[in-house]
Length: 512
Image (tube, rainbow, N blue to C red; front, top):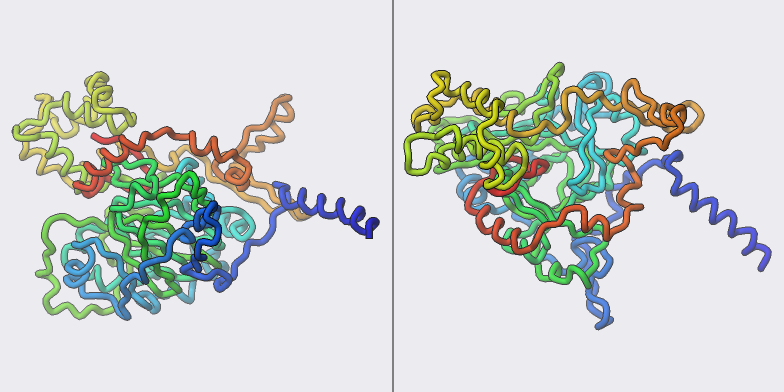
């Protein structure tokens, strides 16, 4: 017996080392039915240990019930009245089942038809601190079943024709306020942070399974929201959703929540500003529609509408991507919000002076507070931009001139204010599977480890796609990455709830 134990120790040690090895990859678990949701919350047995301690998010409190469901999509007017205007989530069962993508989008089909299209790829354990990589769909398909990757990108124009547009977007004001359509893909086992986004979102699943925890924004304090930014309209919590320390984050148990599990063909509406957390299982593909809303709903063009099949290709979308574009324009400020902000800068006056525009531009561009932004003054860069709208160089814009800014002028301003998620000069990420079992991931034309070895220095780490980063990084250090005071967040959150937001989740700016 003792001898067998002695012999087994090296085997166990070797197994453990192999599991930690960066050079050996293992296929991901793609099952759909091995997780119970909503989770069973155990009754408190030990007075010293809080319920849900060191368990995933959702184990700390029983849900109030499921999200409201419909067996078919609502008429746009009803969707507005019952949900969008009140910011109430809902689920549409089977809404996009007749999309060609439901049957077409196998890995082989995606590689053959869309393999040369660029997408943005992130790590599965989202933390909002790492930046995505750009690669082709073909490159992603080479490694996604073994690597810790998922796609979140603008749905390419070439693919939009294979996804159904929801009935709820086929007429009325929604047809004029769609900001982006996005494409999501992974091998499953992804977990988002607890967060909320600037835009309304209809998230439609084409393959796999997704579980949603939905929380009213009034519980933001209980969820320790680490950052809110009114200029982007988004925010997130730094609570570890996989293992919540209830001694540090005990208030989580006070946040009431509802739940939804969606399957292929289903869609869930997530209101702007509504707090949620998402997990995916199995090979997972989604197409989402991000939209804004302002003022009253105009349904005059809905009269006599037959609501026949319509694809996402037929929708008018603000920010798009097609093959050959140098930048994947995801997460830019929406132009309606940008125009609204410029009008707010006018105040009660009729002139937007270049000095005030400079303060606004510096604030967003350099992510600094308004006082610092004002001190930077009017730079040559600011003049260059402002004089595009003020060709007479009178150093101000009238209210009428601001209101008459074209859509393309507003989009160009948004492009100048926001930094692209991946700069156009950054090379695409390449992934090569070696014939004898190893996996080699590198950027085009670069072999950093070999180059470093030649120069006698340590190779640089690729933090963006380091699969083991979250597991091996000290949790205390992660908490200290960004230092945001709770009091500042509370003030910002109360102020920000009064606006509709000015961008998307991955772009963070301070309050204007």
